[in-house]
Length: 292
Image 1: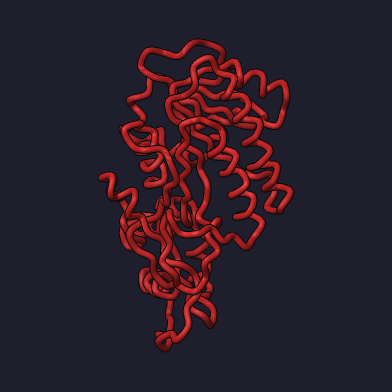
Image 2: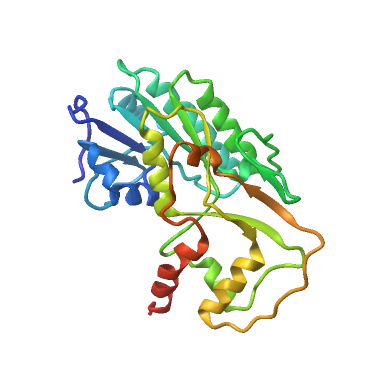
């Protein structure tokens, strides 16, 4: 259903999803989505997300839409934004300025939401020598993306709202075929092996559902699966599955990247549907092979 929204919170709970995209669509497929009486998706366009959503068009940088958002109400809010361009200015607008406007609107609600989940990225960690990284590790962003995300995170953490920030690692899932295409072309990595970290997009939605439960503490969480592995290990395995000829490299003496930990999430009882790439990629490869 596509309509404009301006009505009171429904008795079974209303979830407001701002910037709804593929993660919101995945969330709607979960059993956990059934606990919400209503899920409202506010986004730049009213493209249908599938069953389970009431969709309204909203530009979070617009003053008029900011007033509309300030007049709404919900029991919980998820914010998963997309920058208009992959540039410093795009990230500033898409994350920092947008977050500033959304926070201002939410702070005007008569009844604040019981939980806000703000979706960030592990690009805020700049460690690049194989270090182990968890939520207590220093953020050392080197690129504009990580720096702007940290700037936006700081706004949310200072907002006074009950915010959980989830920093997702590399998201993969159906339709995300870039890595498979690289392997098919024989691109199995550079001279320096790099640790990579992944999370299936279904598990992203499940992590968000987990953090919406206010029995878990608000705070910062890393969302990544159980295995941090060298890029060549993943690509070699994919090459085997795709039937692509490849050579075994020499043992590395130097590595790059970082090894992300999900111990905080798992310590709260969260379990991954796809704990490693070996669990998540078979169905993706099957669909990839069936493509026209």
